Image (cartoon, rainbow, N blue to C red; front, side, top):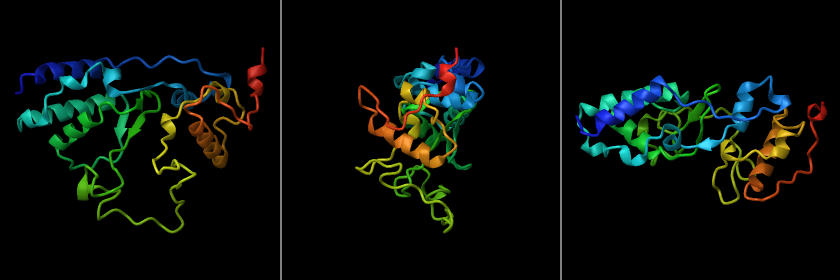
Length: 224
């Protein structure tokens, strides 16, 4: 066994047995009956490194691990993700342990949310089979991926969930201004309103002051 591995496995096992506490946030009145939604909207962004306290430098290079080391570390990571309620939703069943470890390390500093109630979903598929870590085994972009049905709603393009430069907008990484939390239209049942709100927040994510012409004060905020 690699000399660094017992210490790393011990740290991971401690986290599995005693996961980090849920982040603290104040729930506004209109979200008190929707704890999962409040958690999603108000939980701060973090990384696996910050959440676990395990730094990137503590990982031994995968090429230094032996064939016997891979299953032990891969199993520990999988049980850790279960404890943290993090799901890699596109992971193939037959993905090799060494490749799985490489991807965990590669994504260790990715921005995530710690959502003990609702859970956080990770996707490793790049959408391009030439760069996808799963290769031909990917059920989303591989050769056996199902063709989209004609009546399926197409994925939004530029002006929807993509920036004008073609980079994808991740709604989970857009800060939620206080003005939105006070608005009666926040988390509306109307999906078109939600898209417009998401795009507005994305356009102003780097602004010091957030402005919204559609803001309507939630009546519950006026209650004594």
